Length: 273
Ligand SMILES: Nc1ncnc2c1ncn2[C@@H]1O[C@H](COP(=O)(O)OP(=O)(O)O)[C@@H](O)[C@H]1O
Ligand SMILES: [Mg+2]
Image 1 (tube, rainbow, N blue to C red):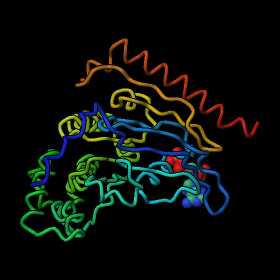
Image 2 (tube, helix red, strand yellow):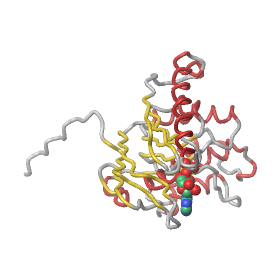
Image 3 (cartoon, rainbow, N blue to C red):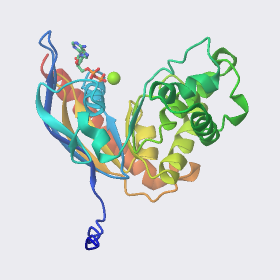
């Protein structure tokens, strides 16, 4: 009999995402990102914040493997992005607009990634129910997207991301088009989900308040050329509630980020001065 394997030493955390001097110049010559180095531990909630055009979407798409870096590397769970499957981990990408199939029911929309992966119907339907319950849409499985509000459509889009049971959730300004109250509700629900499912999240937003409320760390970027300029740990404990948003601590972090964003935006225009 083979000797029992020694269990791996318990590690407090492992890098889920490693961006290793990854840079991007688009074919038209636009230098979207100077080399970025960023290590994200498993279970972190990291927000990318910065003025328009600073490369947030470019960075997120490279992490997702939707774009190749011009130079440098990106690893997920210590494997090149393209080999994520070998690590047994999964990733999902939630875009800014819900991009639902208008002719298909909520459950058919949410089941799409499982249908594409050839998951058997019974198993897929069970997972769809689970994902819809997680986003509070259990009762809307047979509704058509047009019957739902913008916030609910975004929830469908998130359920479609969750249905594959991802370990890493990438979200590019997912709530940017929603009104303030709906956005806050979705932010709060996203935090619950992140904790419950022990997800690693990379979130993109323009909103300082959203960044402070959600993140364990905020990475500030500047434009022309796109680059990472600063990072801030938001050390407030979770769960974070509406009370946190009116606390002196929240204001202090918001001010820090606001000053940093102003610096980043000034940096961005310097090239034109
Ligand atoms: N497909 C593309 N081809 C050429 N330039 C692009 C392309 N996508 C984005 N860019 C440029 O790259 C820079 C970074 O864009 P992006 O990553 O979308 O920034 P952000 O998401 O922070 O607004 C911008 O100058 C943008 O115009
Ligand atoms: Mg963008």
